[in-house]
Image 1 (cartoon, rainbow, N blue to C red):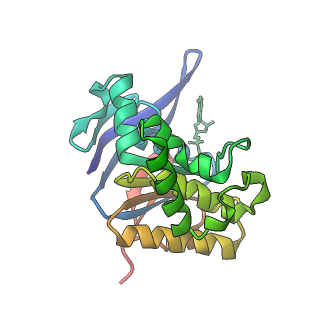
Image 2: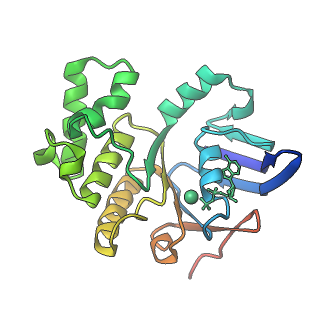
Length: 225
Ligand code: ADP
Ligand code: MG
Protein backbone atom coordinates (compact mmCIF):
# COMPACT_ATOMS: atom_id res chain seq x y z
CA UNK A 1 0.00 0.00 0.00
CA UNK A 2 2.82 2.35 0.96
CA UNK A 3 6.53 1.96 0.35
CA UNK A 4 9.35 4.33 1.19
CA UNK A 5 12.90 3.55 0.11
CA UNK A 6 15.98 5.45 1.28
CA UNK A 7 13.92 8.53 2.02
CA UNK A 8 15.86 11.59 3.10
CA UNK A 9 14.56 14.92 4.35
CA UNK A 10 16.72 17.90 5.12
CA UNK A 11 16.10 21.55 5.76
CA UNK A 12 18.44 24.27 4.62
CA UNK A 13 19.29 27.11 6.97
CA UNK A 14 21.15 29.35 4.54
CA UNK A 15 24.00 27.20 3.21
CA UNK A 16 23.82 24.74 6.06
CA UNK A 17 21.96 21.48 5.54
CA UNK A 18 20.18 20.01 8.54
CA UNK A 19 19.38 16.35 7.89
CA UNK A 20 16.25 15.37 9.83
CA UNK A 21 15.54 11.97 8.25
CA UNK A 22 18.01 9.75 6.42
CA UNK A 23 17.79 6.33 4.75
CA UNK A 24 14.20 5.79 5.85
CA UNK A 25 12.69 2.51 4.64
CA UNK A 26 9.07 1.83 5.48
CA UNK A 27 6.52 -0.56 4.00
CA UNK A 28 2.96 -0.56 5.27
CA UNK A 29 0.35 -3.06 4.10
CA UNK A 30 -3.40 -2.72 4.03
CA UNK A 31 -4.71 -3.38 7.54
CA UNK A 32 -1.46 -2.69 9.41
CA UNK A 33 -1.60 -0.75 12.68
CA UNK A 34 1.75 1.03 12.92
CA UNK A 35 3.10 3.21 15.72
CA UNK A 36 6.11 5.45 15.21
CA UNK A 37 7.90 6.43 18.41
CA UNK A 38 10.63 8.97 18.96
CA UNK A 39 11.65 11.80 21.27
CA UNK A 40 10.57 15.37 20.67
CA UNK A 41 12.34 16.90 17.69
CA UNK A 42 13.37 13.52 16.24
CA UNK A 43 11.45 14.05 13.00
CA UNK A 44 8.15 12.28 13.70
CA UNK A 45 5.95 15.06 12.32
CA UNK A 46 8.32 15.52 9.40
CA UNK A 47 7.86 11.83 8.55
CA UNK A 48 4.11 12.05 8.97
CA UNK A 49 3.99 15.00 6.58
CA UNK A 50 5.96 12.99 4.02
CA UNK A 51 3.70 9.94 4.42
CA UNK A 52 0.64 12.17 4.09
CA UNK A 53 1.98 13.88 0.96
CA UNK A 54 1.87 17.24 2.73
CA UNK A 55 5.59 17.64 2.12
CA UNK A 56 8.10 16.23 -0.37
CA UNK A 57 11.28 14.33 0.46
CA UNK A 58 14.76 15.59 -0.41
CA UNK A 59 15.75 12.14 -1.68
CA UNK A 60 14.63 8.52 -2.01
CA UNK A 61 11.48 7.01 -3.44
CA UNK A 62 7.93 7.04 -2.18
CA UNK A 63 5.12 4.92 -3.62
CA UNK A 64 1.56 5.26 -2.37
CA UNK A 65 -1.13 3.00 -3.90
CA UNK A 66 1.29 2.10 -6.72
CA UNK A 67 1.84 5.74 -7.65
CA UNK A 68 5.22 7.40 -7.36
CA UNK A 69 4.45 10.39 -5.19
CA UNK A 70 7.36 12.51 -6.43
CA UNK A 71 6.03 12.35 -9.99
CA UNK A 72 2.59 13.71 -9.12
CA UNK A 73 1.64 17.36 -9.61
CA UNK A 74 -0.20 19.41 -6.96
CA UNK A 75 -3.62 18.44 -8.26
CA UNK A 76 -2.84 14.72 -8.35
CA UNK A 77 -1.30 14.96 -4.87
CA UNK A 78 -4.43 16.61 -3.50
CA UNK A 79 -6.54 13.89 -5.12
CA UNK A 80 -4.51 11.02 -3.65
CA UNK A 81 -4.51 12.75 -0.25
CA UNK A 82 -8.27 13.18 -0.26
CA UNK A 83 -8.94 9.66 -1.50
CA UNK A 84 -6.44 7.64 0.53
CA UNK A 85 -5.71 9.46 3.78
CA UNK A 86 -7.57 10.76 6.81
CA UNK A 87 -5.59 13.04 9.12
CA UNK A 88 -5.86 13.39 12.89
CA UNK A 89 -3.71 15.89 14.80
CA UNK A 90 -2.80 16.47 18.45
CA UNK A 91 -4.66 19.79 18.56
CA UNK A 92 -7.79 18.49 16.76
CA UNK A 93 -7.76 21.34 14.16
CA UNK A 94 -11.54 21.79 14.16
CA UNK A 95 -13.01 25.00 12.77
CA UNK A 96 -14.45 26.89 15.79
CA UNK A 97 -17.18 28.76 13.92
CA UNK A 98 -18.72 25.65 12.38
CA UNK A 99 -20.98 23.18 14.17
CA UNK A 100 -19.65 19.72 14.92
CA UNK A 101 -21.69 18.30 12.03
CA UNK A 102 -20.44 20.92 9.57
CA UNK A 103 -16.85 20.19 10.62
CA UNK A 104 -17.38 16.52 9.77
CA UNK A 105 -19.08 17.42 6.48
CA UNK A 106 -16.20 19.60 5.31
CA UNK A 107 -14.16 16.92 3.46
CA UNK A 108 -17.38 15.93 1.67
CA UNK A 109 -17.90 19.55 0.59
CA UNK A 110 -14.42 19.45 -1.01
CA UNK A 111 -15.31 16.11 -2.63
CA UNK A 112 -18.42 17.68 -4.18
CA UNK A 113 -20.95 15.48 -2.37
CA UNK A 114 -24.51 16.92 -2.36
CA UNK A 115 -25.86 18.37 0.89
CA UNK A 116 -28.41 15.66 1.78
CA UNK A 117 -25.82 12.91 1.35
CA UNK A 118 -23.24 14.91 3.33
CA UNK A 119 -25.62 15.32 6.22
CA UNK A 120 -26.47 11.61 6.22
CA UNK A 121 -22.83 10.50 6.21
CA UNK A 122 -21.71 13.03 8.82
CA UNK A 123 -24.55 11.95 11.09
CA UNK A 124 -23.59 8.27 10.68
CA UNK A 125 -19.95 9.00 11.49
CA UNK A 126 -20.83 11.05 14.55
CA UNK A 127 -23.04 8.21 15.76
CA UNK A 128 -20.08 5.83 15.32
CA UNK A 129 -17.89 7.93 17.60
CA UNK A 130 -20.78 8.33 20.07
CA UNK A 131 -21.48 12.02 19.52
CA UNK A 132 -24.79 12.23 17.67
CA UNK A 133 -26.20 14.30 20.53
CA UNK A 134 -23.50 16.95 20.11
CA UNK A 135 -24.02 17.41 16.38
CA UNK A 136 -25.27 20.98 16.47
CA UNK A 137 -22.79 22.11 19.15
CA UNK A 138 -19.72 24.21 18.50
CA UNK A 139 -16.33 22.50 19.07
CA UNK A 140 -15.51 24.67 22.11
CA UNK A 141 -18.61 23.34 23.88
CA UNK A 142 -17.00 19.86 23.87
CA UNK A 143 -14.29 18.26 26.00
CA UNK A 144 -10.88 17.50 24.48
CA UNK A 145 -11.70 13.82 24.05
CA UNK A 146 -15.00 14.66 22.37
CA UNK A 147 -13.26 17.13 20.04
CA UNK A 148 -10.76 14.44 19.07
CA UNK A 149 -13.64 12.06 18.32
CA UNK A 150 -15.14 14.73 16.05
CA UNK A 151 -11.76 15.03 14.32
CA UNK A 152 -11.69 11.24 13.86
CA UNK A 153 -15.22 11.26 12.42
CA UNK A 154 -14.08 13.96 10.00
CA UNK A 155 -10.96 11.95 9.08
CA UNK A 156 -12.92 8.80 8.18
CA UNK A 157 -16.04 10.33 6.62
CA UNK A 158 -14.49 10.05 3.15
CA UNK A 159 -13.66 6.39 3.82
CA UNK A 160 -9.90 6.69 3.32
CA UNK A 161 -7.72 3.57 3.18
CA UNK A 162 -5.46 4.87 5.91
CA UNK A 163 -5.68 6.97 9.02
CA UNK A 164 -2.63 9.06 9.80
CA UNK A 165 -2.49 10.41 13.34
CA UNK A 166 0.18 12.73 14.79
CA UNK A 167 0.18 12.42 18.61
CA UNK A 168 -3.61 11.86 18.68
CA UNK A 169 -3.66 11.42 22.46
CA UNK A 170 -0.98 14.01 23.23
CA UNK A 171 -3.45 16.59 24.51
CA UNK A 172 -5.66 14.10 26.39
CA UNK A 173 -5.61 12.42 29.80
CA UNK A 174 -4.92 8.66 29.98
CA UNK A 175 -8.51 7.51 30.23
CA UNK A 176 -9.63 9.65 27.30
CA UNK A 177 -6.59 8.52 25.35
CA UNK A 178 -7.66 4.91 25.85
CA UNK A 179 -11.10 5.69 24.40
CA UNK A 180 -9.43 7.13 21.31
CA UNK A 181 -7.31 3.95 21.05
CA UNK A 182 -10.49 1.84 21.30
CA UNK A 183 -11.85 3.70 18.27
CA UNK A 184 -8.62 3.14 16.35
CA UNK A 185 -8.77 -0.60 17.16
CA UNK A 186 -12.33 -0.73 15.88
CA UNK A 187 -11.39 0.91 12.55
CA UNK A 188 -8.33 -1.27 12.25
CA UNK A 189 -10.50 -4.40 12.67
CA UNK A 190 -12.56 -3.16 9.73
CA UNK A 191 -9.43 -3.24 7.60
CA UNK A 192 -8.29 0.36 7.76
CA UNK A 193 -4.56 0.93 8.06
CA UNK A 194 -3.46 3.18 10.88
CA UNK A 195 -0.17 5.00 11.20
CA UNK A 196 0.11 6.70 14.54
CA UNK A 197 2.91 8.96 15.68
CA UNK A 198 3.51 9.16 19.40
CA UNK A 199 6.24 9.78 21.97
CA UNK A 200 4.41 7.56 24.48
CA UNK A 201 5.53 3.91 24.51
CA UNK A 202 2.39 2.85 26.42
CA UNK A 203 0.22 4.24 23.61
CA UNK A 204 2.48 2.57 21.02
CA UNK A 205 1.68 -0.83 22.57
CA UNK A 206 -1.74 -0.58 20.93
CA UNK A 207 -0.16 -1.04 17.53
CA UNK A 208 0.75 -4.31 15.81
CA UNK A 209 4.04 -2.89 14.53
CA UNK A 210 6.23 -0.42 16.39
CA UNK A 211 8.98 1.70 14.84
CA UNK A 212 11.38 4.09 16.49
CA UNK A 213 13.09 7.16 15.03
CA UNK A 214 16.53 7.82 16.42
CA UNK A 215 19.24 10.06 14.98
CA UNK A 216 17.32 10.40 11.73
CA UNK A 217 16.94 6.67 11.22
CA UNK A 218 13.84 4.51 11.49
CA UNK A 219 13.94 0.96 12.74
CA UNK A 220 11.26 -1.58 13.54
CA UNK A 221 11.15 -3.10 17.03
CA UNK A 222 11.00 -6.87 17.46
CA UNK A 223 7.44 -8.05 18.08
CA UNK A 224 6.68 -9.22 21.63
CA UNK A 225 6.05 -12.95 21.75
P1 ADP B 1 8.91 15.78 16.18
O1 ADP B 1 7.56 15.77 15.55
O2 ADP B 1 9.50 14.42 16.34
O3 ADP B 1 8.91 16.51 17.49
P2 ADP B 1 9.65 17.44 13.91
O4 ADP B 1 9.47 16.53 12.74
O5 ADP B 1 8.60 18.44 14.15
O6 ADP B 1 9.92 16.56 15.23
O7 ADP B 1 11.04 18.21 13.73
C1 ADP B 1 12.27 17.53 13.51
C2 ADP B 1 13.39 18.52 13.29
O8 ADP B 1 13.19 19.20 12.06
C3 ADP B 1 13.50 19.60 14.37
O9 ADP B 1 14.86 19.81 14.62
C4 ADP B 1 12.89 20.80 13.72
O10 ADP B 1 13.46 21.98 14.21
C5 ADP B 1 13.21 20.60 12.24
N1 ADP B 1 12.18 21.20 11.36
C6 ADP B 1 10.88 20.80 11.24
N2 ADP B 1 10.23 21.53 10.32
C7 ADP B 1 11.13 22.42 9.83
C8 ADP B 1 11.08 23.46 8.83
N3 ADP B 1 9.95 23.73 8.16
N4 ADP B 1 12.21 24.17 8.61
C9 ADP B 1 13.36 23.88 9.26
N5 ADP B 1 13.47 22.94 10.21
C10 ADP B 1 12.39 22.21 10.50
MG1 MG C 1 5.70 16.41 16.22
